[in-house]
Length: 134
Length: 134
DNA sequence: ACATAATGATACTAATATGGTATCATTTAT
DNA sequence: ATAAATGATACCATATTAGTATCATTATGT
Image (cartoon, rainbow over all chains, first blue to last red; front, side):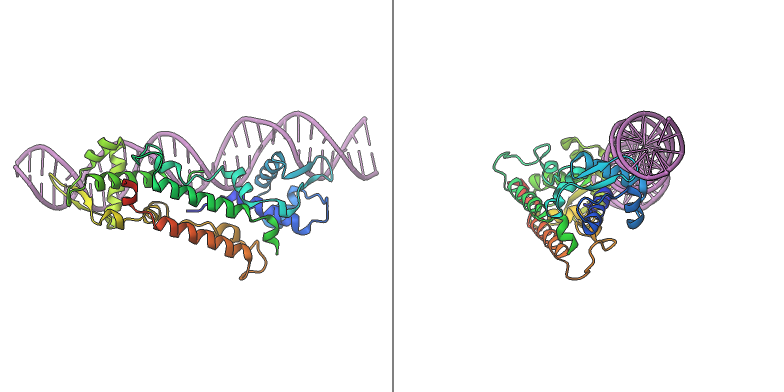
């Protein structure tokens, strides 16, 4: 079972490319990036538009336009990207949906799952696009 | 994004029911469990058959037959159930698929993701059906 | 002004995974 | 023999994921 979906993956790669080449403020057109990374162009376009809406990129319309990073690579966190494209990770929810566990509040399992989830999120929060470059 | 799928969830609940009621060796028919837990019968049947194939249950055909646990509840691990129905969790794979990361072996990211994955698996391995009962 | 090259918005389609049914064969208790 | 169960397996329905198409808008260069 894969935890990272394709769009998240593509987003990460595109951001890395931009960060790598990144003289400050350089615009990248979708076709430029798609060509380089061999990602289907219109799909990537949708992805970058999403990143733009979420303020991770800034866009410029018109000839010579494109996208550029709106933050430094060390301020773009993996967990953020995952949440944008896949929503928050929920490890817990299902087991507890119909209170399989009789003593609701202080169930050991719930606590343990919450711990795991917190750990994962916090670790993923510590990874940035910059970390992927070096 | 939900990490636990429905069949895993149902499997857990069914096993819990069996463990809870469990005088040693008691058989449960599919319809009995499905009725109790309000799970669609034929779907649950498929799930229990899978558990039987994986030797978590033993089955008995014919009138009065059914399924029973083939292990003590404290020997049935969550992570095992997840892997049966959903395959191994793979956090890493995707980011590294097309070597987004240039220095292949000693990349910090890879190590970190591996760490996270190991932690999650080991923590899930420490949770058993028995833990869900008390 | 106009052609061109880009993104914005959005609707649509294709492929795959998930959730669930149906059915026939086999086994066992009564 | 019959009824009550599982075994095996093929099928169907729905949801999610992956990707395309298209028209509108905006900016640039001539």
